Image 1 (cartoon, one colour):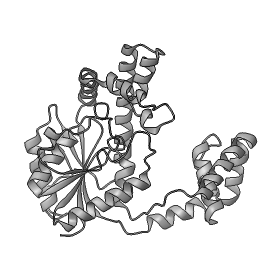
Image 2 (cartoon, rainbow, N blue to C red):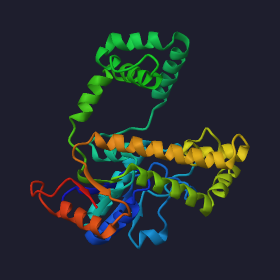
Image 3 (cartoon, one colour):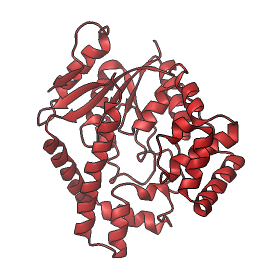
Image 4 (cartoon, rainbow, N blue to C red):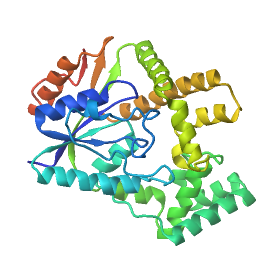
Length: 323
């Protein structure tokens, strides 16, 4: 079996889980989750984590692999998920990436490798952040412009995170981030892939589905789930608690906002996140789009994905369909 993986992605609430499981059963596959929040244990309701019933016996990987108190990085995801894929290939089965975290998917598919941050890297980043506070964004931007004008031209002096990152790479390696990115992009991909993205023809249908999902989360016990995490000692400093659905309920529990206001904020932030996910995916010209006309038709979607997977690139199967 060649090192080619199937990817089912798209914005939140588009039916990725069901399609991934159905295709795994057809193709002899196993699911590798590509969701940055489903890696955390005890965060089930707010992440819409796949249930044992929904798995239908299909093995799922990269779910419940970290405690909410941990900081889970893309580097750690790539290391663990690539090991999962290699083990699946070794069993002569197909890895099927399912999830909406575009950074995780792109990083896994690419040939990039990541290393855990060293103390020196952390020291340099902390030093640069202090310099930014003391000298200001304009001075830091000017420093970047002196060594990497191409990258500086793309950034605003107010873009603290990217300016600090660019200078951090330069101080660590002596290479500009422009050179670093060019070298990274020239690496061969780790895996070949077919990427299918789900969406709705009408944006209102997507938003309505997102709103219904949030209401269902509340009915399923989202508030007690968040309270249980707080009881474990988690707070705003933990990355897991910054997830959509969790940070808003925390505010409601603390009395900063009402529960009704929290629910509306969750719906709004979820809709905004869906727009960002779509923007990320549209940058990739190789994505095959499957758009639901209203209610998802799983059987037709499976047939279309199988045709894409089993056919050569030039056989005329459309890369965008409405089902």
